[in-house]
Image (cartoon, rainbow, N blue to C red; front, top):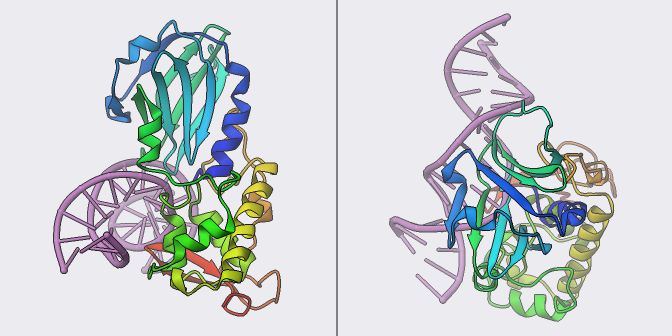
Length: 269
DNA sequence: AGCTCACCCTGGACGC
DNA sequence: TGCGTCCAGGGTGAGC
């Protein structure tokens, strides 16, 4: 489940391909292209000018209004390998051959992910994504204002990418645990102190995960097809029935907003 | 407008 | 061993 830290890790590991030129693109499944504002062949011969991240989206920027936007869904991988690497992996839907002897592979077993060929990413992101949680303009005050009047569980609020983007099931559970807030609490029931605590917890959890190259629960791999390490630092996600790392009581699991939610009934109120 | 929920998909875990 | 069933979830859109 690639969330912000995983996509950020991929972005960083792909910086070395900036300046490389696309030789050829092999598209094996048409339905992996979610939107085509230009033809795929138009980026053949073009240089990669930047590799960027916005929320859980990754963008290859070619300039002249040509962007290749990637979302990894929950089982997607996007990684570099030698252009002559043995081709024995299942579910590789797109191969992008570069002029540096490498190729980029988009592999996605469950196909919740996809590619967008966009002339302008600004509008695309603006209508889907809210503030970047690690940016300066994501403040405690901004979060607190967003919570006002919202009756949905705080978990559902944080999973929505519109107020703040990049969080998914793992980091929402971890941040709520760090802040001592139960996931089912109505968003507008948080005090300003709790909102500030949650704001700090979100940024801390994301930064810690990025330092550990993200969480590999099952499918996630970075831009070099390597696992992350943050799964070894998770406090509650996937640990129902295990003792709480703070108090020792057994961690709970319940369904909120249609997602499995892990928490400590003793440490979270 | 705000909110809930079904749906898409496949591999792995689990039960018998 | 093998088969069937269930579960995981990001984003979208239908429906209340």
